[in-house]
Image (tube, rainbow, N blue to C red):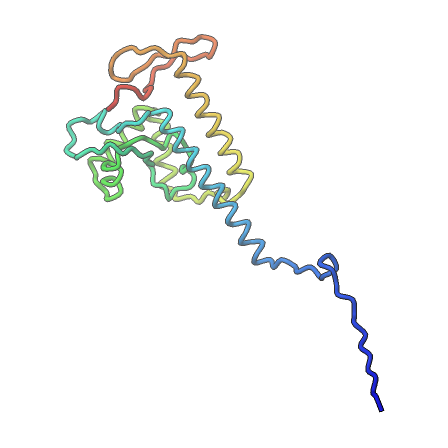
Length: 203
């Protein structure tokens, strides 16, 4: 006697019918943090470009303090006058100065001569009042509440990009007054009547 068995196959679900896996809050938060960190990095790179465009590829310590005893290098970096740990001033172009890698490293190891030289360079360039304000901000050890906020970082990035473009635009209308890198901006349509470093002749 033959036994007949029948099997009913259930139709397989298509990919579109498969239940969707929900993203965990932890995963979403991790992705958001990564994107914020990338934005912070983009802002830092834009800040470096502003400093480089303003100061040129040179060591400002060597230019302004040629008698300081240090073996300068031909690798140039944007240095934070006030520590990079201070996020209130981290992206402030007033707080940046181009120096060589030797000066940057020496400053990082608390070389007082180099640190004071950078302080004096910034004070001369930005003015005593602006410099003292930055020092006071550093002494307060205030935390930047917006450092991890996308809208604030995007505003900073836009401002830095515009600032770099303005520096380039000003350079196009400047004339040299001497051989030290000092320039006089003379285009009246830009409402500019100040002198500053154009970044040339500073090697």
